[in-house]
Each structure stands twice: as structure tokens, then as C-alpha cells.
Length: 297
Image (cartoon, rainbow, N blue to C red; front, side, top):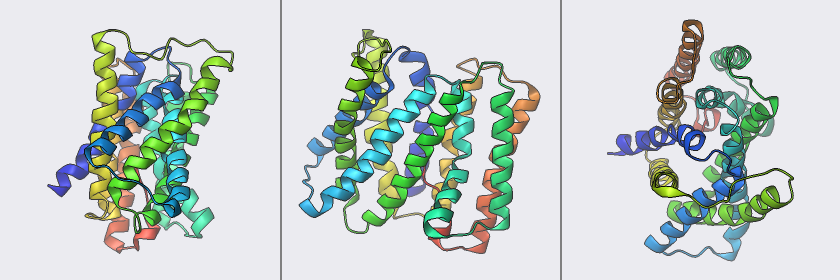
């Protein structure tokens, strides 16, 4: 059961980019992020009421800001400007951000295999972005990198906080606080940024169904399953299952979403996935400490 739950979240998350790109065109990314985070947190609070202690508020606010407000907002902003396949490509390269953060803030030096894998991921991702038939906006790539950085940073903080705060309380309140922090960000984007967006209310049954999936399926359910399994399986297993997210995103983008790619580009995507998995496999065989292999999705 724990393996199924660990696989469930990344598989569900892999549908995020296709749903956003197909159903929420013209939306404010930060307004859409409010819809994803705040109702999901309130639902979890109603299912199991918990209240944070005053001493827990700074950590919960920080995690909510990094893992929810910044990550959701920047990810949606990138997903609305990039083909969903390329968002998946960027997420495959997430371990590169993880290694950089661990090296800078924890002075953890990457192994040779990690370094080689990182170089391959960077080279492949660069090629795919530059060879895309759809024009790629540099700002969208920056937004995606920012989203991944916020995710990794918040995940590192959350791993320490989970030693003192129950996972349900952590999940509930990081979603609620993250959603609340997103409201002024969404207001500024819609009112003062000078850009035009559609009203931040779903229209029609199809869009409401997509919003339900985004809020319940991809947030309340997926995040609950993910955080519940963190203490039960190793970081290496989490990293392995985490690759299902970008892999499914790439598959959906190249099939359902109709993103067009050549055989060479598809081969490069496969090389990225293989490089990521091989690096994780060798690190697992070496049995490195958990702190040296933190890669959270």
C-alpha cells in the first residue's frame, strides 16, 4: 500500500500541466493558484481540525510561502507559456536544482555520477528548449526555474519541520497559509500589473470539473498521499517515484496535447529520464545518507 501511495501523487501531478494549459487559458496564474491551495487546505481542516501553536507559525508560514504560494504561482505562470511537454522536461531537471541547493546551503558535494547526470540533464533540457518548434519565452524558463527552486527550498525546510509537526497539520496549514498569501499576489496581478485576465471564476461544467480535479485530486488527495508516505519510504524511493510526474507530463503533452517532437527530441527526453534514474540507482547502491540525496517533487 505504501508503494502505491508513493506512486499515486507523482502520477496525479503529471496531469497538472495539461489541465492548466487546456482549461485555464487567460487566467491569472496566481488566482488559479489560490483556487488550488486554499480550498484544498480548508477541506483538510474540516476533515481533521487542527490548530497550529504560536511557536509553529513561522515555519508553517515559510513553508506555505515557498512550497505553495511561490511554487504554485510560478509553476502555473510557466505552464501557461510553455507546451506541457517542455514543463515536464524542466521538471526532469529538478535534481540539478536540488544538488545546487544542497551544495550551497549544506556544503554537500555531489558525487561524480550525480555531477555527470546533472550535466546531461542541463545539456538535454537546453537542446529541447532551443529546438522547440513552439517559440519559448525566456521569462517562462526563468519562472520554471524559480518554481523548482522554491519547491526544493521549501521541501528541505519541511523535512526538518516534520520532526516536530504532524504531517496532517503541516499539509493543512501550509495550504491554507500559502493560499492566503496568494490572495494579495493574485489581486496585484489582476488589478495592478497592467495585463488582462479572464475573471477568476470557472465557467461551464468542464472548467468546474477541471477545477475540482486540480483542487481535490491534485492537491488534497495527492499531497496527502505524498506527505503521508515520506516517513515510510526512503528518499531514493521518493526520488524514483517522483520521476513519474515529468514523464507523464511529457507523454500527455506529446499525445493528448498534440505537442510535436522529432525522433531526435524524443530520444533526448528518454536520455534525460534514463540519466536521472541511473544516477539515483548508483546513489542507492552506495547507500549515501539521506541528506545527500534529497530530491523532493
